[in-house]
Length: 284
Image (cartoon, rainbow, N blue to C red):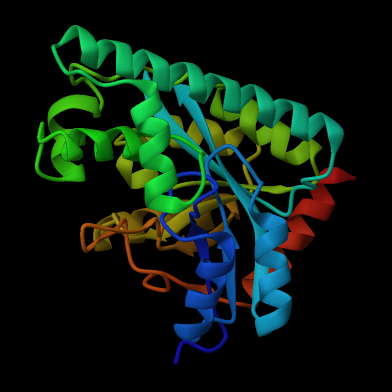
């Protein structure tokens, strides 16, 4: 049992996961975790459901978010913890991000149609409902339609051949910069962390974000190598940043877990106090 451990990166059906917020908390309990962070893409819409289930099961739920940003032509993700999801200004900013995601979905569908694939947004919306019982829509739902039509065999193939970065159906998501995201999180009373920096292959940019005032680095991640973890642990210590860990759990599709199984990357639950202290210090 992974008592006294926390997984600080998990997604639900509120963005592109396959389990509801309550189900992710239930899985955390089954895994023996003491705490789990709900970090859906560009929304905190699942936090209250998760908190309620956490209270029922005696599992600590960390209110979180993963903001999609862009810098130097790269997609950069910034995790935020303990931001006040009820704050009006924060809610307005997240609504803008959601609007941009909707426009991107439409652009992807249109690009696929231009390449001879007969796909519609109605089919994508229906796929989102069938897969997850909700209608928060992203690329995994578009990929599911491509699988259903026989265009590809798996979700992974859909990304590799059609909707991944640089592929025929890819469309850029209108994004803020990581520097703006750090500021937004701070202004909402939260603590900011650079998500999975090893995926960016740009440590110079990572250091620029650090110097802008980010609070931590996700050192341990399902897609990080041992070398990545050692490098980012050293970087965090050099700048006095928090070292976090998360599986980036998205659930299971066609029997495959994305990105890692819940609880596969964890930190001591004592780190939560430091995350909260950092958020309170930044908001003063």
